[in-house]
Image (cartoon, rainbow, N blue to C red; front, side, top):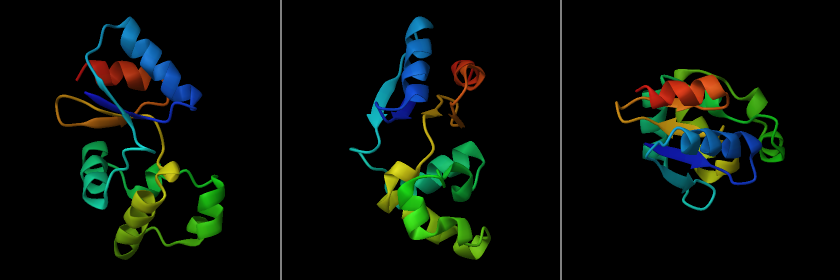
Length: 119
């Protein structure tokens, strides 16, 4: 299992604490330093069963500068969203846990972290 984190994020720190308490075997990826490319973002979106706008932090200053709130949320615009996430990784919702069974979860709650442990 891999967890994408921003160490400054309290939700990420909470997820790590819970994973440690449960004795989980995982790898930490600081995705602001080890930035995922477009193909990897597409793969994780497939594992999540979500669209790129579903994992975009639209309240970030970078998102406001890009005007993402105004972007269409449709199939034709999907690549634009993915490209923005790859070029501006701070916009990626966190933490994301990729589970051993090929799925993934946005682990912002204790229940979501526990769900990833059961996969």
